[in-house]
Length: 88
Image (cartoon, rainbow, N blue to C red):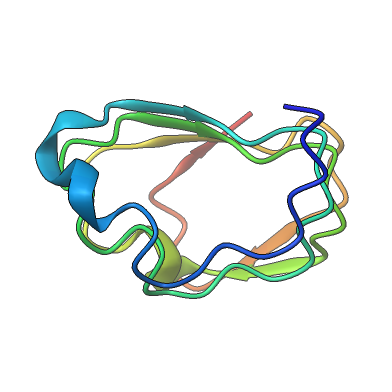
């Protein structure tokens, strides 16, 4: 949080594989998140991407995860695709 992150490379989280379950990316400068970023995080249960510059995020961005809670607290980000996510 508050790290001024604006870009996350597609393979950045790959080394964490199945060990990462919670990810807090709130209050950064993200304007786009590639579908590849969370691809290898099969155990990810919760991610907070609120208070970024995101306006739109594809459902497929979290498609590799069976059950996930995604926090968009600012309610400015819209998700396109399947609505099976819990969005807070």
